[in-house]
Length: 87
Image 1 (cartoon, helix red, strand yellow):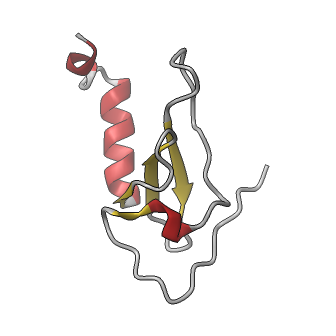
Image 2: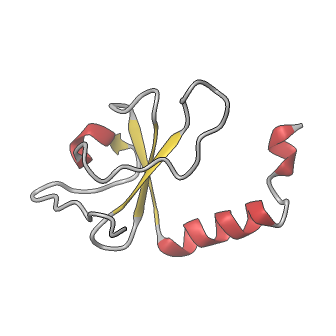
């Protein structure tokens, strides 16, 4: 399945911006746990960066990450480096 890359015109994309300014299309839940559907949503931006928002607060802030930052996070989580967050 091809993911839609949103086209956002005349919007400066920055870390902490209101997620609603990125639009409603293109957000995906990479996984969902047993927490009643509240989880994070991610969107790949046209320039390759990744926006992340809390699904329970879709109008709240969007955190913007570079592909390298997201890769480091995912690889670290897979290696157990974030396990301390669960204990």
